[in-house]
Amino acid sequence: MIKRGIFILTLLFTMSLSIIGYCQSPGKTEQARSVSGTVVDTDWVGNKLVVRALDNDDMTFVVSNDTKITKGAHDIDFSEIGLSDAVKVYYYANSFAGLKAAEITVEE
Image (cartoon, rainbow, N blue to C red; front, side, top):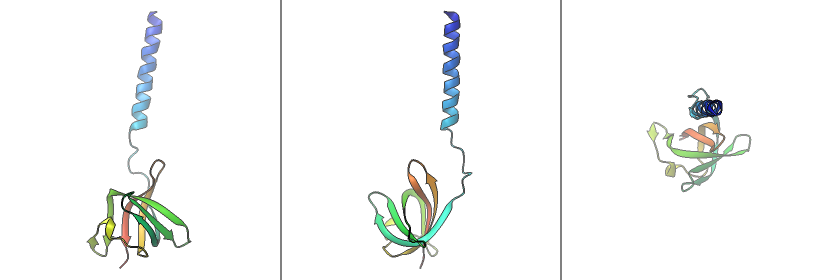
């Protein structure tokens, strides 16, 4: 009975260490990717931006409150991005959220 209790405690301890290691963020080791193209759709409610890249592929990005958006030397709101605007998007590929925009630069 005691051996069984020790086994269960050891198993629970090992599982808790595994979960802690899994939940910790790996840090910002991933490099941001970038793409240039033209805005073909904006969804302010869904926080999504669709950009047609130079190779004619449409890419959908999630725009969060942390996304830095600039036009020239000025910061702008997501709602100020218009259809047909030329943009450069720096993003991270997130398996849960899709492509997360870190920075959007709108060409003047």
